Image 1: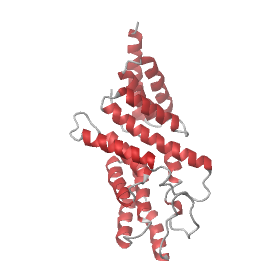
Image 2 (image 1 turned 180 degrees about the vertical axis):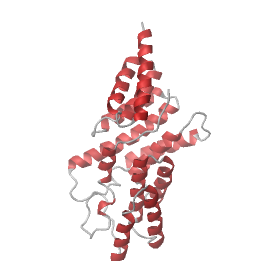
Image 3 (image 1 turned 135 degrees about the horizontal axis):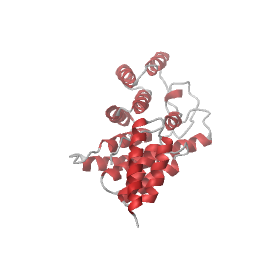
Image 4 (image 1 turned 90 degrees about the horizontal axis):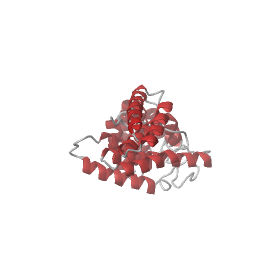
Amino acid sequence: MRLIGFIMTKRVLLTIALTLASCAGMPAQGKSGLRPLPQARTTQEYNDYNAARAAIGGAALEAAADNFSARYPESELCVYLYSHALHVYQNEGNAPRILATGGRVLALDPDNSIALALTAMARADSITDNDPDRDQKVAQIRHDCARALKTMDSSLVLVPGVTPEEIVAYKGSLGSMVHSALGIMELKTGNDSGAEKDLKTALSLNRLGGDPSIYYHLALAQDHQKKYSDALASVEQAMQLASSNPDLQQLAEKEHDHLQKLARREP
């Protein structure tokens, strides 16, 4: 049974993006969240920020962030450019650059909950059989996930006009990402019961609809514990939701066939 990289849906990313750079650099309007909106010090800095943020693609955005940071090393806006590149890399499924760019965000803002969650997810995906860095990765994932949950409120910067419902959805999405990272890490390190618990929590927190990848990994955790009926129900959910992801759809169908065979052998 093959594990695949965890892929967040675009709807989750759009919800999270509500809290990021779309209003960075605007004229001061007071605090919109627990942190004030970042400000450009000059009109030129503001214009250069907008030009950098207009770059297309993760690599171009990261390069633009590097150039902007070199020109304005003290700017409050640097972290928002790297955050934007981080989200684009997540859409592109580029795990190595998620880790690298997430590291740049965290160097500027150690309590950035989204960067903590995204890098934890990418690090969990990177764990392999006989991984020489497994213990180090597991410790870092646990640390970053705990910190992401702890800083969820204090690190929040809200775009003006965001509704309470959107804030609740954002927090649920972020919590779902954290527990998904923990669940996949536990699944890859043999803690199937812990994986099942965290993946179920991830599903319960995701208010934007079920994610097929979570259901697929949950099915594997339940399969390993010989909970075949539960695993079948989970993998069938994955199959229903994975139509836009042919690779995941194929894996879910293979796991479904495997579970049906096992279920038929049960007394």
